[in-house]
Length: 225
Image 1 (cartoon, rainbow, N blue to C red):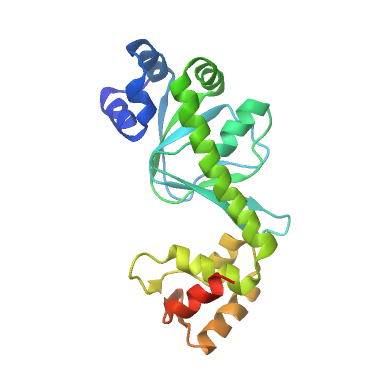
Image 2: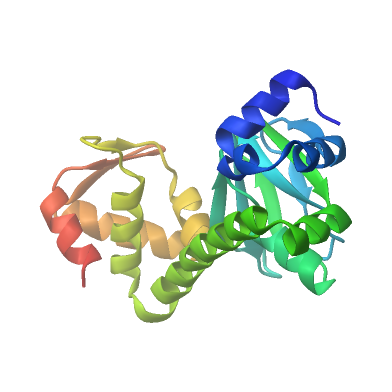
């Protein structure tokens, strides 16, 4: 069961809670567990049983796949106000977790037991609408990732990644070649060669652990190919 302060935060960050009647709110509150994680913590691994789904109150969680050789690709990230697509799918299908989930910064979640999740999904229209909207949004992210891998060449994928990770008017990104490779599911050597090509064309400049975008227009053109 969660306390009053956490409950208020829950209602603020998850809109469906406000429209529930008091009985439903009480039932939900009694089933939730407030958990905190530090950066770097692996909270789910491939093959784990999904006993809970969870609501993210604060922080960031990266969900990724890892090959037998250790290469990684990011499927999506969970941020404040979101639920975990993979855990929902596991609970609904009685299957194991198919990926890995790692905490990227100090994170707080509210864990909801699978049985309670199923009950609310079947009985509470407001909760059902919220969950389906979140699942659809996250599925779009995953499909976009698959589309980039299947149909884009390496230059396009890296250019798209750099642009999507550059904040407004930001030129410098603190990213290593290995981190970029991990995110897009490629080998570090391939990423390094592509970045070197961009640098030779004066589209970016490189320094240790950093990539500076020097020609946004050219990078955006490559990303759109």
